[in-house]
Length: 285
Length: 272
Image 1: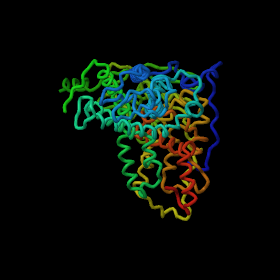
Image 2 (image 1 turned 90 degrees about the vertical axis):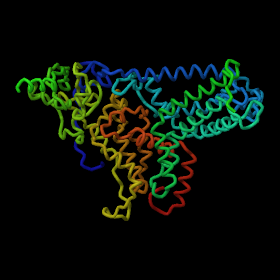
Image 3 (image 1 turned 90 degrees about the horizontal axis):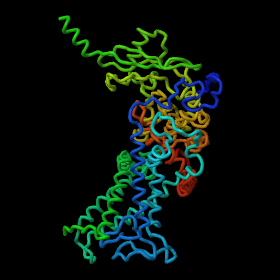
Image 4 (image 1 turned 180 degrees about the vertical axis):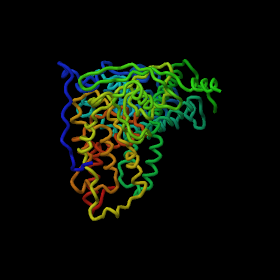
């Protein structure tokens, strides 16, 4: 590319009329004079609107459940929003991830101590970034649809430069997924702690943890750390193969992001229904 | 005989409504045309028919008509596309098609824009640095090591990705600092190249990606990928890996420390 044959820089195109310097973007001086912000005729707004609605619905639900501090344990099930439960006032869970790490000074819901990690993981996730930049910030609202902002610096400065910490949240997400796997194993007990039992909740938990793992391992940071950062795959055949597998999952990252978001809410809601007595967990074994 | 031929012709052709932007940097607007469309035609065919029958001075840039030269980039109904690869059957027959030049670049005339911004950005990316001690004909690489870079080599330089990227499309002032997806992909291609010796030559492509080519401006909204006529996964395979490589260098002390230790132990040759 650096050919050393650089021609002289082309003269700047003339401004179109007086006051044109106040215009920017697709209405910049010199560009084709089209007044409309965009000329798309399809329903381009549907995707960002749907994304925003879906994310808002999840935020509303999770805020309600996270601050409720109730109905999160119905033996043998613990809500994924409250696991691990690391506050002093957690409901006792037989063999579960009920660890009094924070002591008695924490007066708020124990869910808030844990949810910060999956929240941070999803907030800095490359897919969700695209989704909320488009859906909430209209930056851009859709491809070739002009954004409404006068200035744009992207992820070059605070606070958005912090998106680069995604990999750290990925590390924490692995730990959280490990705990939820443990909870899923515990769901194959009965209310007294005896093994070899299962109910509808066990299946809900299995589906949820499968989707959580698929979403976590399909992460772009995971793909990079497991092999993408290498320059010579031929020298690292195992990592190359793992990179290929993660790449296949990564191609479905957006779908897995939504599927796991829904499944974790469904798993929590299931526990809520059972714990609050609205619904009795059907037992198979 | 003539009746059946006429019936067949009417079944396979129709009159379409087009609005084509005409003008130059001093001004212009959308002009209406009614033009015949036949089976199997693409938008570029219709633009050529308008040129041949109604507006002989209509300026349009084209070359191969096969989706390989990247010349006929334009916006059809507001979407950046190659006109030669946009089939008329993609649209309803009663739909009015609006064709404008690329809206991120200065217009020269009608559908032709000045894309020299892209050539300036291309020159800012230092090229492949040959490995020391290996003659040009002696380069040997495993296929698995070049698969990633070869995806990016499919680029036909149509600049649809550059045109649709909101960083420069909606913010003219960012053109100085931001190279755009096509040239960040070029940086990624070279950084992944198994024989590129930029690091030994003192060129840190990950640093320059951030500090000189504006990688941080990209907010990975994937419009570049959406419009790529070659189907290159620009965002997932080039931009995000490049962001992760930059994060290795700048934001991950563990990776930074590990690479320092390895570099101290390594005698020579490109990294892992």
